[in-house]
Structure formats: C-alpha cells, structure tokens
Image (tube, rainbow, N blue to C red; front, top):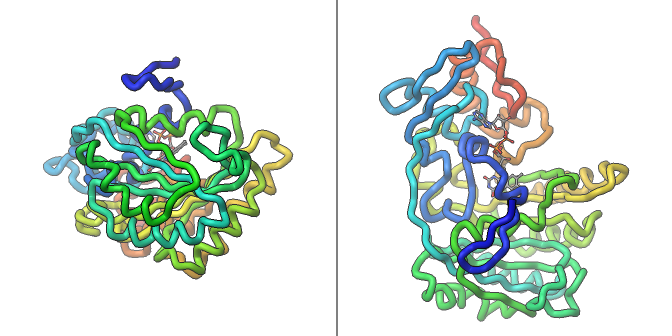
Length: 346
Ligand SMILES: Cc1cc2nc3c(=O)[nH]c(=O)nc-3n(C[C@H](O)[C@H](O)[C@H](O)COP(=O)(O)OP(=O)(O)OC[C@H]3O[C@@H](n4cnc5c(N)ncnc54)[C@H](O)[C@@H]3O)c2cc1C
C-alpha cells in the first residue's frame, strides 16, 4: 500500500490520496490546479450515467446536455456516473515552498499574504493553514507543538522560476522556518496523507469569505487558539483565477466568483470529545459571519438540512436543479447525498 516516489518520498496510500475522483468532480473540485485551469467539474466532457430507474444514458453536449450541466457541480443527485470523459492537463514537477510563523507574527504575515494572493500569477497558488506545528527539522524548536501559521506557495510554471515567483510573499513576510523543494504532482497531492490518517474522527465546516481584512484575521487567529484538538486545522485560500472564466450559468456549480474559501477541520480520536470538536468547527465559521460571501462549497457541506443545500445553489439555480432532479430521479432514489429534492408536479 506504500510507494516511493521519484524524489524518494514515501507516499502511503492515505486518506487524501484515497479520496475519489467522482464525488470531487461532480461537486466541483478545488485543488492546486484550479486557479490555473479551473474546477475539476469544468473538465467533465461527457459521462456515462446509470439513472435511478436503471437505464443507462450518455451525457454530453449533444445528448442529455441538461444532465451534463447538472453533473458539473450538482453532485451525485442525478445518477451514478460509471464512466467519465475528462479533459486532462499536463503537470510536471512543481516548486513547493512553505514558511511557518508563530501566532504572534501571524497577523502581519497574513496582511502580506492577502496582497500577494489577490495579485498572484495564474501559475501560483498560495494557501494558508493554522495548526499545531510538528517536530520537523525545518521548524524552529520554539514552535514545536505550538499553534502556528503555515503559508504555502505552489508554482506551476517552470520550477526553477518558483523561488523568484514566491519571493514577494516570503521576502516580505519572512518566516521563522521554511522549506523549499521540487515535487511531482503526485507527491504534492499526497503531502496531506500522513496528517489525515484513516480511523480518526473528522468534522468539517466551511464558508466562502469576501475578504481577509485585519479584523477577520483577528477572529481567525482567536479560533486557532481556541482549538480543541491538536490534530485540527484551519485552512484558507484565495480562489478566483480560471475558476471565474466559465460563465456562471454554464454549469450547476454556484459561486464561482467567491474570493476566499475557509475551512475549519476538526480531527480527534476520542468519541467522548465529539461535541466539543464539532462545536469548535461551527463557531469557527459562525464568528466570521461579517465577512461571509454567501453559500458554501457543496462537497464540504456535511450535515446541514435541505435549506442549506438550497442556499448553496441560490434560489434561481436551485429551482433549475429541482426540475432536473424531477426529470432524472423523480422519486429521489439518490438521496443519501447533499440532496436536491425533485420539483413536485403541479
Ligand atoms: C481528506 C479529504 C481531502 C479533501 N480535499 C478536497 C480538496 O482539496 N478539494 C475539494 O474540492 N474537495 C476535497 N475534499 C472533499 C471531496 O471533494 C468530497 O469528499 C468528495 O465527495 C470525494 O469524492 P468521493 O468520490 O471519494 O466521494 P464518496 O465519499 O465516495 O461519495 C460522496 C458522494 O459523492 C457522490 N458520488 C461519489 N461517486 C459517485 C458516482 N460515481 N456517481 C455519482 N455520484 C457519486 C455521491 O453523492 C456520494 O454520496 C476532500 C475530502 C477529504 C476526505
């Protein structure tokens, strides 16, 4: 189950690498490549779909084009996809640079991140994470086991240009410790595996943010300090780029213009701590209400009621989706999901 990659890194087949393509693509699909090339769902060219009545159809621009529209962001509501035709992209080696900051330095670093991220080249994708620092060599001992800010820049252009491209971030916000290296795309994707092993307990809550103002940063840092488990994390990133190049009405995926996505991910081991950890994720998102952009990413909606799914898609799009659901799954056979209910016949 484990492999060694070209750069000698062990890639245990962990929970991130195991996360499937189908659910990710049907709900949207954010990742390192989204700012450069758009969402995964924008790469669905056609699909073979088993409908709720057992019939098999092909969704493409020429056949069941309405179904193809729904598969690009509508999740698993309309049928079981048994084959995708996807547009592929060539990704070689990427430059990966990460800097760590104490919480005392974090507000200043995030002010720099905000300017950098909102002006970054489409080949750049910079993300932030607040979590308890591990004991790696490149992290200063004073930060080991302490809540800390990690800023990561991934450069998808020529790898040798990466350090220069990331310098506007890391020269201005000089980290307490940093690591810079080249990775294959598979290695990059597997980096999170060791941090999210199978068997732990997880709960995620997410929202889009309008902006990362200094006031919002204060609230985010307070939430990082309030964390209930040393395994939990807060992740955020500036989106836009090619995500916004697809017209809003062209697919079921909503909120393409959202500037930032923010996610509080609780991870813990002991079931008796469920309530406190779940409450932390909820309050982490709720206390940012002033900066909420509206809606949420459907693949990060975990346990909310149907009203939340309606809010995710917004009223106008939701009405179109319920009509589509009535056409392809009128009795709501496929309901164990972020459910879009079929429109009722008048
Ligand atoms: C560790 C981790 C990291 C993640 N990171 C990201 C990330 O970086 N970016 C991002 O966008 N998302 C991320 N996600 C969320 C991810 O997009 C969803 O969990 C997604 O549902 C995973 O797809 P899956 O095929 O594994 O779905 P499953 O868990 O197998 O299924 C979830 C739902 O997807 C639908 N579905 C799955 N397969 C099919 C199919 N063949 N046909 C029709 N419907 C189907 C169904 O509704 C099903 O209930 C992450 C999730 C995890 C657990």
